[in-house]
Length: 321
Image (cartoon, rainbow, N blue to C red; front, side, top):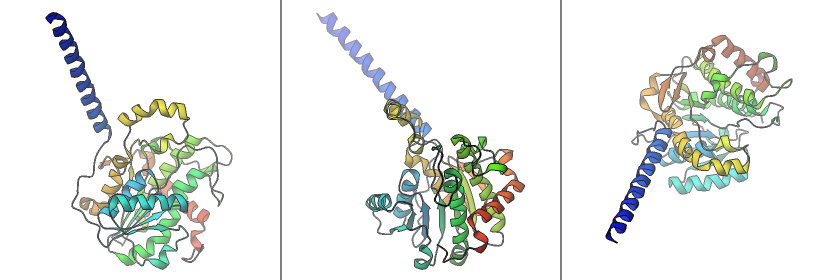
């Protein structure tokens, strides 16, 4: 009888040890996949004004919570007022801040605020079915690039007036590596592939940042772009439900949480050592070298010029709606 109990005890112990090992392994694997974290807890943003586009979900929302916690006045640039208000309440609750406001992207902002320190171009769509914005731009190109191109340009004057050293941070993606600027069909009218449209738009983010450096010469405003990593949010919008439920544990282990996904954005927005840098690309809170096609200054200039034409920036006035 004693023998049997001993065996049971052995088996139980082995199972328990195995469970602990598996748990530890999963925990550390998940921690590893969360990537670089912005460790600098002391930086405050009191009395600073921050705009974050796409702040109603995912990494935009996490970045908004963190900026609000650190004392910033945060404006959420969102298209959908109902979703925005729900997210705004959550950001107020989690940050304990009173200073989080909705921002109508028709730039009513400029009549309310005379100051802007940090602009985070974060809103994005990924690999969605073919669709066009109200203005007739292909959804990826219009949302991920042109909207931010226009917003940034319209806010430059207020930034220059506010502060010697504002920051403009644009969220790109490592998917830019497969991106290609299709000069003959940049708006995907002749031919549409969702992945190509997405990767092109993420390459646009980087080329936009590069050319913006030229436009900011003579100011102390700096600009950065980044790869947030593979995050358990946006990727999943167009996958079917069964796949999603089956994949959930896998996503939890191997993909970043939205909070981890926001770390490089926060790093670019706040890290003091970056004040001397501009136009660079970061991933996991570290500088990353870009592929040659993302350093093509002639292409960056071509993209800037066509973006000016498409958005009507040349004859845009601040009161333009």
